[in-house]
Amino acid sequence: MKLTAFLLIVGLLTGGVGSISSATPQEPPRYILDPIVVTATRTATEVSRIGSSVEVVTGQELRDSGTATLLEALAMVPGVAIARAGVAGGTGTLFLRGAKGEHLLVLIDGVTVNDPISPGGAFDWSTISVDAIERVEIIKGPQSTLYGSKAIAGVIHIITRAASGEADAHLSVEAGSYHTLNATTGISGKLLGTAVRVEVSRRQLGDISTADEKDGNHETDSWSMWSGALRLQRAMGAGRLDVTLRAGRSRFDVDESGGPSGDDPNGKGWRADLTGTVSFRINLREGWEQRLLIGASRIHRWGINPPDEDHPDEHIDSDYRGLTRSLEWHHNVVAGSQRLAAGIVFDRQSGSSRYTYEGGGLTSSSVVPESNQSAWALYLQDQLSLGSLALTVGGRIDDYSDYGSQPTYRVAAVAPVAGIRLRASIGTGFRAPSLYQRFSPDYGSEDLEAEKSLAWDAGVEAFLLGRGSASLCFYRQEIEDLIDFVFDPVTSISRYENRSRVHLEGWEAQARLALTGSLGLDGSLTVMEARDEYTGEPLPRRPERTATLSISYRPLSRWSWGLRLRHVGKRIDLVWSERKHLRPVTLADGEISCELNPNITVRLRVRNLTDESPQWVWGYGSRGRAFYLGVLLAR
View 1 (cartoon, rainbow, N blue to C red):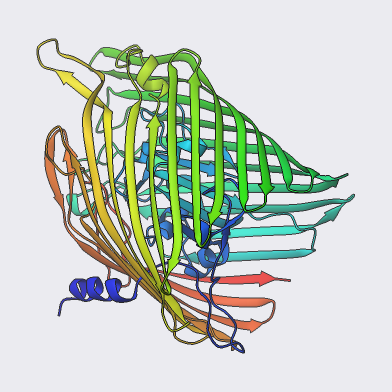
View 2 (cartoon, helix red, strand yellow):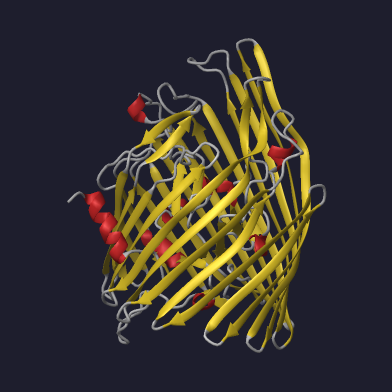
């Protein structure tokens, strides 16, 4: 039997990334049976009481997996597909249940980090590492009822490690193939009555071509990044003040394009990110908590491509600046069997961009002047218990200053029936046109309408002999008034228009099994149809089938190991309207660790064990087999 077919079967029978617990009391539990999440309802709620489809990946699971970037780690989550234009700083995109990257809202500690000046307003996953992360909460399906625009496909909330006040420190260094260096250090403690945590990391990669080497591109490119995180926590009377700050700066080489003759010896790009929040929460009386949050996210991207031997008369430079600011006043009220969540939100996005090209004696430029749009929103949600049924009902209205109002709703329910758990949800979502789509003088249109969505899902979860769980979820979603970049052959004018309608449906099967307190088996199978109903064609870069299988052995002794397999089925890509087929691929990663003493651990990691060479975006390459050796010091 072929390995890919084997993975599909094993993934269906045994699969997923998740949270269960060992059945033997004396053995250390490997998973959390019923994790508490905040993102799904904006209140701390057990997953067993949430009707939405939720995944939780802990920071410890991210670090145990050995992956350097969050994008690679989330590729193991059911319903997730990823694409990246090369490995040296190329743009990274995450598709949740087949929806566009711009239909996914990404938060860091409650603040939106989607790029407001990128064409669609998506988040670029190429620059975020797994450092300083406490957990990642993934809520699937439209979440505009709680989070407004962009949450059509769902929400991914990255929550950084809290400042507990306990004194500890750690240092890890890893080096290996492709001039790789991954180093991170952190310290936490208490200073003048304030809990403090600081983490800093450095990552670099080189000796690989962004444009695929199989197409004759041999000029090597590199990527490097510094990032840091600061978190403060202080008790203030009956309340608590939290301050978070996360910053990153990366530099990367840029090739002219993917495919043959894509090399460029001197194209370079930079990116700087800064995200911060100030949050104050207080219990005014028993059962009533208020929280005031002020947050901001700034993204600056720029690049330059001067003349070179292959392009002696070309010069390109670009500059993109985006800023998101938000203010939220949130209330949680517990009254008997009901939990009410209500809030007022103000959100403002601004940005500008410039792209200039000189070549062949001609100069062209595309400039988006400083532009902005703001919105007020009011939301209300009620979680109530009706016997064994847990029901969540919510609604929201978003009002844009120069755009109009958008109402949304969501209903979700979960109930235990005969030893199994049934879930179902239905909701609406929307995405307002991005700043670029509205205000670009060359391609924008202020007459664009919001994209709108209706989706539902239903699932069942069963527990396996007290040692694990298995689940199956079916979903269906329609997105209409999709904004497309359209070329008119009559007028030869290109611009953004509301034109397409997208159909998304599929099912996700996963299981989690703790064979012992030390040996765990996880896997998943996702089958997905993502189709543009305007053209009838499948959406690019979305695989029809994805399967994962993870085996981990983490005993109480010094040695531990893990193995992860991921099969990605056939996909298509579009290059200047030409359909390109991307072949199926099966990847294998693994690691083995040895704890020399309680403070020192050594780890050997191998990536792409079978030396595959997949293209996630046509014409752009990926790393072959790679080995990494690292050491972790902690106390």
